[in-house]
Length: 99
Image 1 (cartoon, rainbow, N blue to C red):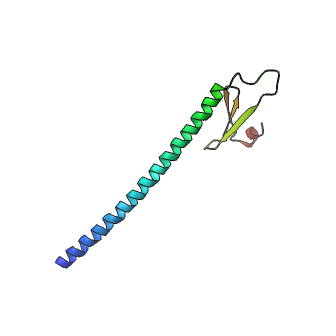
Image 2 (cartoon, rainbow, N blue to C red):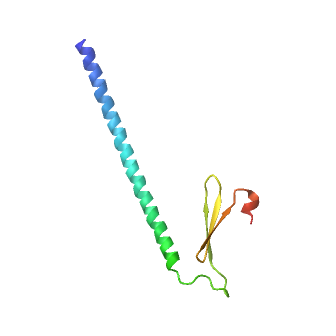
Image 3 (tube, one colour):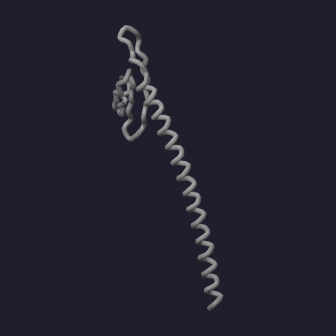
């Protein structure tokens, strides 16, 4: 009887170690993802600030520079930055993508 209880206790101790290792792995992964997300936020903030600080925008007499960013999600969208305006197009269908 004591031998059976000792085996059960040893099994529980090993299981506890395994769970703690998994939790440590998840904690590390979570911290890495949080850091990457904060870096992304900082980068997007820097881009937004530089766009805001940009003087004027495209002049009416010259060819305007346009930047486009494609964002993939359940519905594919294209965001076009023209001067200080953001224009969002739904390009989910092939007909929309050709425009």
